[in-house]
Image (tube, rainbow, N blue to C red; front, side):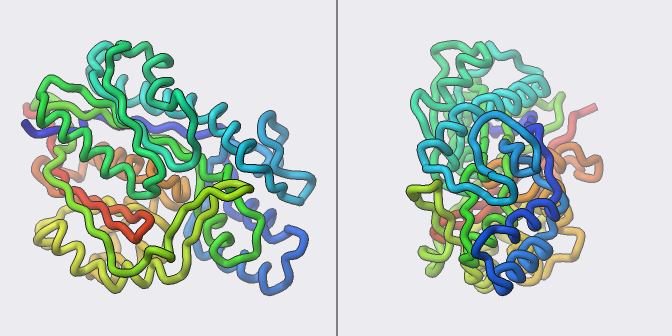
Length: 364
């Protein structure tokens, strides 16, 4: 039985902030010399992001309860425990909001959900997001729960793969997949180029999907196949570790170069004949990554437009971002029944996760 994404829901924090506001705030940090300020300006301006959403209103210059991260124009460096406490306070609501939207659009009631798969790499606690979704949504207490943690930006695809395996084994299963990332909690006020690049792209958001057996009376995205590939390079170039003052991202300039150098062979290996691809859902880790993928795969400028549009409006929301792109493709009338979608995302390692997806439109 083919597993199908029957609906996708998304949710965002209330605070929306422009890229220029965040750029000017970050560049104003004490101890940043002219070289660091120029690097901040270049990184933020080249990111191809207009706005981002954050759970910390102070980053937008507004008052707000919760984690204190700003004293005037000076960004503070709260300890990891305080940052994680804010994650625990704010993440469950976003998990629930995106999940409710996905359920409401699916044609299923909450009583139909049999499995929950949650995803996050920006916080941790127990009982975790999977448990809270059961309580917050009023799901059956017998729902099977799984949590995929610390996989990074690529994690939505393994989560969908797990959901597809569940539905393939049990055609009656209805799986809720929910991704929430609060990247803004881990801003590092450092002039190191890796931290500047991370601050220039990462944002907060949540996405959820209902995966179930295909229903010919409804539009959906059939999960046709999956593949994963670990590159020979990149273990030290993209990494995510727990530090004393938040989670610390390593994102070197080698990442786009590694992807650009190896993506052609990897894509052909994991996705098959690229000439058969009708649409692309590529995780926008950053503009330079999309540029490298576009160039290496010799795609036309329109191919990655859905990815670039999500990046421009929301930034890189880590694992949740791919669900925003798939949401837009599912709603796009230009995507016809039987069209083949290639999805790709990149995570620490450097790991490439991929999925082949077939668009399905409701039969007349």
